Image 1 (cartoon, rainbow, N blue to C red):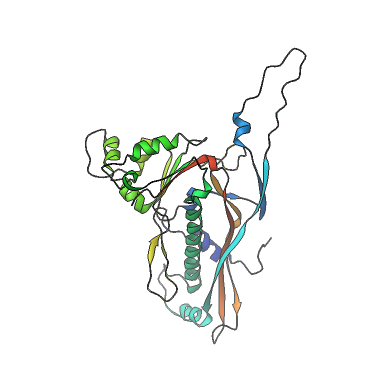
Image 2: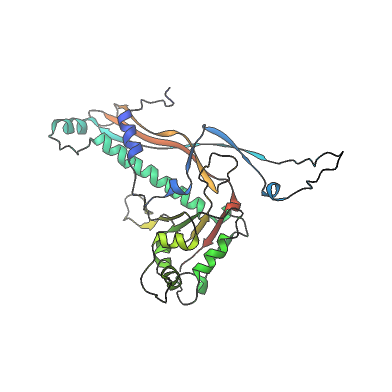
Length: 316
């Protein structure tokens, strides 16, 4: 059954789903994995004290066992719609249909879907980055703001290996994923302390790899956000900046986020799949146009603040 008020074109939807930037650039889906949900959804948030406070378990010969009450809170939420439109004039489609085409040439409508999909993905990347790199989404004791000699760009005085190892031991669920912006990673991977540790030698030059860092910290993933966004207004000269800032998040991301007994720092509720379709717009252009629409229904959720640690301003 269709869930949209306009015709969904399966061919264009395949383009919308299949198009993606390089994994090294956009990491939102790895940081806050998608979980299929209803448009309106609910999840239960339990207090960590319930699972770590042990009541009296000994039972007398004729007494009743201690009654335990797990005080879960039901959180009601809803996916939001995110979408963009573009117009493809009919005369462009007519011109494309009449011209000889190599096997790899796509139609103006398919190209529009690809470009719209890229913007939808980039917007989601920005939302996830601003959520994960936000100190308000971590417990007060699970974060640190670096400055001066403690920043990891100070190779002479800072010790990021000690700082990371200590921070990994603080959350109730030991993080299995490190999230860094590209600028922070470029500096961190050249830090002499990490190079020495990774090579088990006095060597201080060169750089470590993501796998080196993962092995040193005993984590599963090291995710580097390398995407760019233009911060200038339309029509002005572009001002490019990194989507992910100069920070570092240590996150426990569950391998089975749908399991209620496996807390995860966060997830993305997703209703359906990304869609793409087209419908006539006779008022646009002399010969009319097709309106192309691409969108998705998702909601980024921080579910367990005590499953993460946040380093702010890791480099100058």
